[in-house]
Image 1 (cartoon, rainbow, N blue to C red):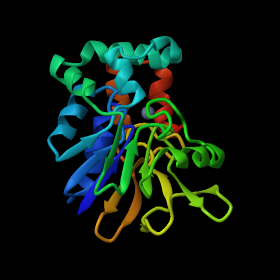
Image 2 (image 1 turned 30 degrees about the vertical axis):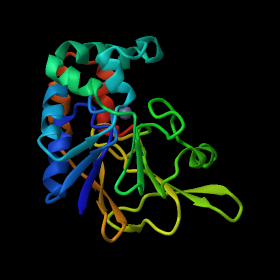
Image 3 (image 1 turned 180 degrees about the horizontal axis):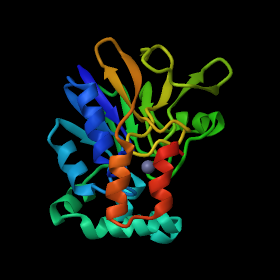
Image 4 (image 1 turned 45 degrees about the horizontal axis):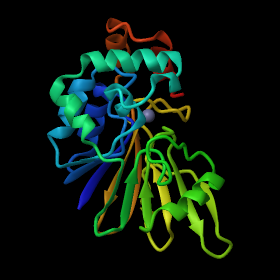
Length: 244
Ligand SMILES: [Zn+2]
């Protein structure tokens, strides 16, 4: 089976549609959370995702839009965008967001899916091998897929000295998913933060047990224009140009 893995779409429909067109054909979509927040088209992104065979996790921005999180935890721009998102969402889409799970083991128990980390699925940022190492104790499957940092990376567990290493997730080159245990972040569709503004995603081949990471240009200006029309914070508009 060919599974499209996306994360941190952040209501950027132009980026999402570009990824969907480039990644096709695929059998299923796994989304690692933060469908909404920051971007201009939250309802359309939810509806587009729901048109596929979909497994979707809850992210912190999804919870913020629902009012399940204290917005004081957010910086002022993110808070404004969360409040705007909450006003936009239809009752049906709010209900759908509210039913998203925090954590899913799936695919014959081979993969654990979370937004942030296995230890704290909604909030924790896995930014270093030390944090990744601690989190290898919080899931039982060989592989964990996560988002939240908007930075593509692969952490491998080294059983000999019980440490973890971090590697760049190579572009266009399949990574074999055995025998090592790994935590993999496919990067962000709608707001990359690794200095590369292109949309990021991955394709999982569940038969060959390999994962391939891709980056793709999309019409950033089109999304920025929609954000300006919605009067979303200027800093959130400009950051898309730089991928930070
Ligand atoms: Zn996010």
